[in-house]
Length: 136
Length: 55
Image (cartoon, rainbow over all chains, first blue to last red; front, side):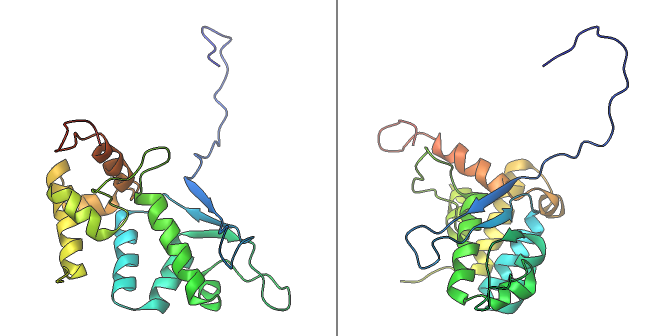
């Protein structure tokens, strides 16, 4: 809606720009029902730091970085029904398989081609694919 | 099969993006990582070498 030549009024203060986020689910896996809210607007430096931790096999460092910079919220609970905190400690408390699935989904969300476009050979959802695409 | 070390892949990605956008690596590092998604979409629109149609 656009108001043209309307009555002079002050612009309301305090509108916060919405963050780019993604909600991921895991249908067809052992984690069907889990919902995870992730931040998409992270800096390239944070992305590279995450990749370096993962590739350098520093799983703990990667989980903590991810928990601090990317993970926003989730509905995960422990065996006693207590919520697992959605932070670096929580990332370390969940199975490694789920950690890897979460990170994989996030990498696809920030660097993959959105539906309905199909990724082609220059798929950059992996670092290898991206560096190949850059070299073309 | 020989695969590239991840350090090389990473360096090629950063170097490629910096050349593409004529910026310093430090400037790239401050950019939003969803730039990769944009590059992927542009890539989809490139003609296929075989038939000349967009990918």
